[in-house]
Amino acid sequence: MAPPSPSLPWLEAGQEFPPVELAWEHNGPLPGLLAAGGSLDVATLQRAYQNGIFPWFSEGQPILWWSPNPRMMLKVAQFRLHRSLRRTIEKFRMTTGCEIRFDSAFSQVIQFCANSQRGAQAGTWILPEMQHAYVSLHRAGLAHSVEVWEQGQLVGGLYCVALGRAVFGESMFSRRTDASKIALAALVSFCREHQIAHIDCQQNTGHLASMGAREMSRTEFLAHLDQGLQQSAPTWQFLPLYWQHLLSSTPKLT
Image (cartoon, rainbow, N blue to C red; front, side):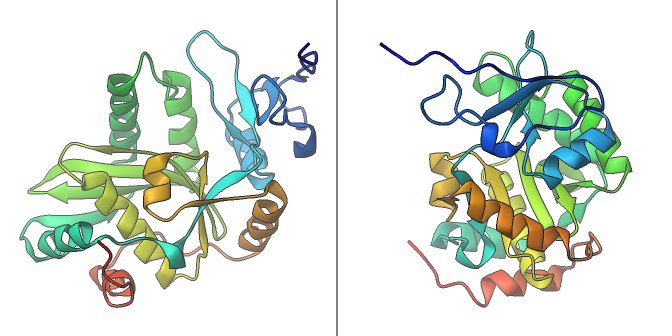
């Protein structure tokens, strides 16, 4: 007989989160689920990320808060630059009208990410209320977009949350082949420039693993998070010379 499901704490707006150690473990019905309810205002989202918690829910559900164990993390020093992606980036850099921008079209990026999710599955977790919440977080200086532009068109990108030097990847999209990979590579280059050691990827996927992300225990993740939170935030601006942190130091991989 399966063990009974643990009860799930319900949060009122402004209420503190329960300790992350109380999140459902692998023997629970939804591993990593911590609480439901609350709100998506800037203060609540900031407090959540500071404690290694993030929201993720579908249409018709209440706000659900998660703190998985283990946690998927990309150590930027271990980013896997495959030979084909290296060639794609080098061509991108040399093509007139191709550039990386930060934060010039955050609302478009999150909308395209939502559309991309919707095309890949029934529905999307980037619901209108989530989009509004992260646009507000962006206006507060705590969320950023990494954008791939070609000939004046936004063709790929990602958005992330950043507190100090702790970076949390959220979602990405492509409207051209490998555009989202270029965006991730640009974020890795930026992180190397500013001594940001890790990018939180939240949950394990084969795509992230192929790029070098690996699982670590929640305890280890929280230790890295605490280090990042204690450091001052960098200026979120991408300069072309940042590519050298990736292209000149990473071995070519097949």
